[in-house]
Length: 380
Image (cartoon, rainbow, N blue to C red; front, side):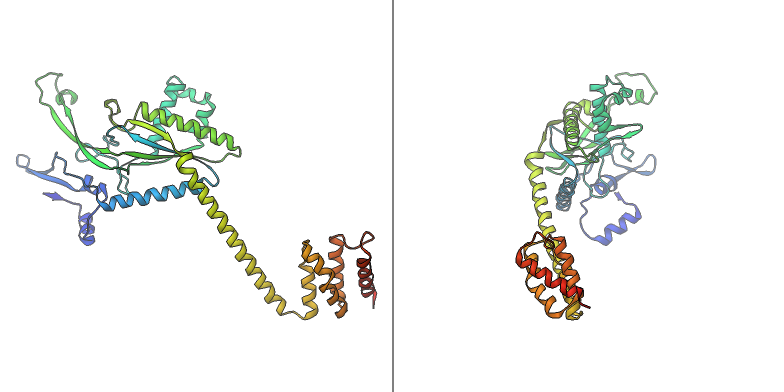
């Protein structure tokens, strides 16, 4: 017989659809059997099959795309490393977590996928580093500049970020069995003897082809330092996963990785460059739209002015470009003289002074225009 929490049952019945979330299949979809001696329903020790439904695979692909896009955006201002890790066998994470079956498996609470939390990955790599470079003494971590920068110490946070590892490619769950041969000995009831009956304990393991691992760093003005720390963190991560493995029962061969390759140059950077080009195109388009908007606003403002006021405004908007320089000497100058517009003459004089067209070192033709403009300014 199957039992569900009341609220879960209501949600499932209303949804009227298959549920891909593995937490449901592993933690809620539990068969119970009647214990006639104790007169109670007890969770069955046998594991039911946990299907990897198409809905879950679709969620996995969407998650992969979202993470890639997030990392590509991060790479516009910070450092990113992408590693491709290949499992050599099964992996089980969270075996000892609290569960009615006494064995568990870490499932992401939102996405419903098996995953390795970032805290576990960072903890593993940090432990490996301390054993490899600090002779197993955690206090000596502060003596290593890169170790302090990557992992952090008591008064200094680490500058490299580790992320959850989601097991998506080739995902499937496999049943496994752990046989406890001397249960009474482990319970402290009897000595370790050969006449005790073995107690098989079933648990879930995860099979996956490969997994993406991301490392990031930010907060450095020196790009070389960022690159160096990420390179070192990638190397330590690779060594830790291949030598030690991650998760439960690593001493028995679980959680080991056969290959951990840096695919930043081959897979990740092309996406970063593509995104950078897209952002540049979008910025150009936005700048053009903004310039067009300002021009339209300026035209609307000028349309409300009198001809004399409009001429002053046009002169004040002149730039140092060759087109505007020539325009100031031709059409705008002619309008100033025709209108006898002293305010516009003041603006034109200021512009010519700014661009070096007012003074002694000018052409004869420009000198004539200066004199005529000066006469207009001196008239009462």
